[in-house]
Image (cartoon, rainbow, N blue to C red; front, side, top):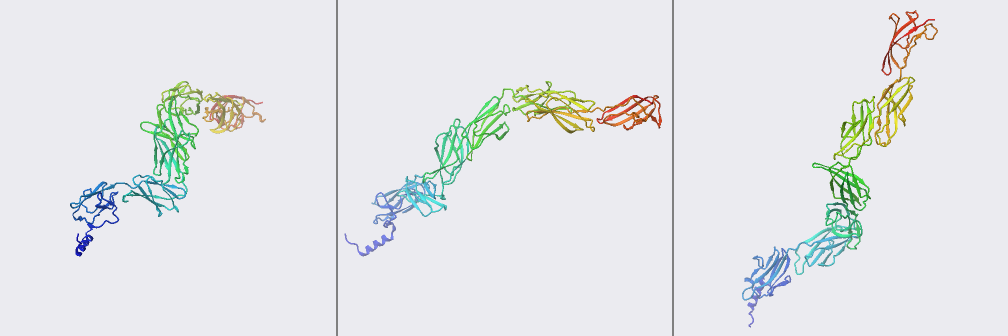
Length: 632
């Protein structure tokens, strides 16, 4: 071959340096086509990857080359892929050079999935959960980077202080461009691992329960379970701060209770700090004749159990929370305070180390076929012309109280009191009993028959009162004693105790004639109201007297005719001679007749008197009679 003339050499060099289509491939081009006629800068990456082509043979004039990037684009030498898949780049050269190709992989890989876990002493462990990439580059946010291969042990890193950091993880495949999304997470180093707290546990049904936690960020938490509070705890699952409400499923809560705790793990040292232990409460309800039996199983809580009861009808729900407080070692409760044929729902809760455990709710309709309890204590209080009946509230669902007087129904009540009006309490005692009709239409008529206390008495002429009354039988535990109370003009004037049903005393108060007495039966059972008798008003006798003869002879003995007595507040005396002429009058009990008219002595003989008297008790008396005037 003849050498080229100098001007042809210069022309060739000029063409090669001025036509980039024929330039040499630079160092950024690392991947050769199938036949080696061209190279590309990248063969793998995420969507958005830009691929460049260079021609490896400078002798090839590619001014008439055709480029097919596999996705229908019209780009030349450079193309950006926006969709995922495997694409074949084909370069069609001028004849007689055959076409050449290379395959490009465009992926839709996401940012790597990773977790940060705190270790004591300001350390962190990076848990690469991702398997998309061949390698992972970790930037710890303090100028330190580390690259690990997929499956390598999780890296640890120690921070110099507790300043917040941003940790970045980038996934990088072999022979791929690192244009895929990166993941970041914030992290604050800590000195010690804090314990978790289980704040509540609620049984949902026979196979599920709900747990709620108080958790810190970036701590490796492991939920552990222990059936029936026996044996070792076992791993159930891993949780994180994002687990606000957690559900444990596939449990046998009908026959087993479960205790839970959360382990806070230092992944760098495997040291563990535990939360409080909280246990589920398995509640069951058995409807019995006359009561509902509630039973439950669980570990002993820190404090007492609280039983919640709801009365449920078609239109309402009435809840008592708590209905009962039950000791933490007990596991059963019988509820007999029930309305018949009523739907009751129960749940129970308790505190375990600061966390509240709530059972599921169990419901049932109450039944009772046995007779209700009887009214065995009945207080009868006499009040004016009425008798008030009071009795304790029974432990049963009462529909109606039937009041019987001397075995005859006289009324009914919805409450534990009844007033029998218009009875002759000053004339006799009345006997009562109470029948109970419950909401199941069961009747109990075996209650006590109680008779009101009927107080009787009188004063003798020496102002000694004698009282008596019937023994009260309305208290099943009996009467402790009787109290006899005395009244002056309606005001209490003292009281005395008596162990028997009679009483006497000398009443010598000269200022009081009408004396009131009332007897109260004090029950042995001090929770019951006492029984009270009628108020008996007795008047001391006024002892009205007068002489049958008088001798007005001036000797100072029986010189004046008087009508005398006790407790006299009003007095009118009239004296008549034998012819019916009124010869003397007086409105002053101290002013009697001296046997004269206008100073003239009257003859011996028989004289007539009339006297009208009102005493302190308000009683009015009319007396008349005759007397002799005698002179010596």
